[in-house]
Amino acid sequence: MKIIKLDEVDSTHTYLKDYIKTNGYSEAICITSDYQTNGIGSRGNSWTGTKGNLFFSFVLNKNELPKDLPIQSASIYFSFILKDILKTIGSEVWLKWPNDFYISDKKIGGTITTVSNDLIYCGIGLNLINVNEEFGKLDISITSDNILKSYFNKLKLKDSWKQIFSEFKIEFQNSRKFQASVGDEKVSLENALLNDDGSIQVNNKKVFSLR
Image 1 (cartoon, one colour):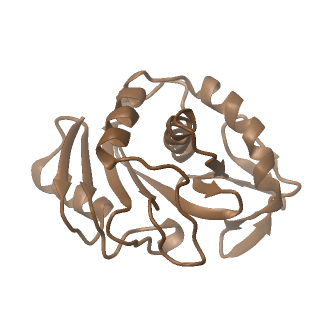
Image 2: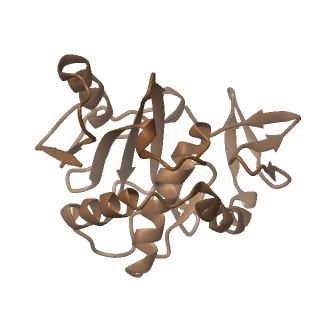
């Protein structure tokens, strides 16, 4: 994974897409920054944060991912791998469906994944320090460089979707006391059915995590 480090950027996700448009894709690339001023969140929301938090976006070819991964659930896959790494070094972080990082009942970060032809773009933001009272922060001390190194080493192993999902569906029970956005409305996950492809069945709708 080629990593390009920036001091400040409007959005690592937007910067990466513009970079690929200009230079084309020849290898997996990650853009990371100490600070972003206009980060992209789910459903057009923004995800900005204080300098010192973790912001990164990367792009891969579909062929570099496990063959059994439903592309529509790539956000769950990418998020759960990071969550697992953080758990192994002592964090109590968990993943709320489909792609939000939580400590207890407070969101500390999230993932956005988009697809363009054969390329998959993933952007992740994680609060390492306090932002405001609405959001929490990671409960352990880490350095961005170490996390990125561990994350991309783990991603190269291509753990199967079956393996990742078997763990995620157990953790999904934590999501039932929360809501998720379906279209333009917030719906309870209390009675949602989690399908094997990572989608949920709620209010007679099948909803995937891909944004």
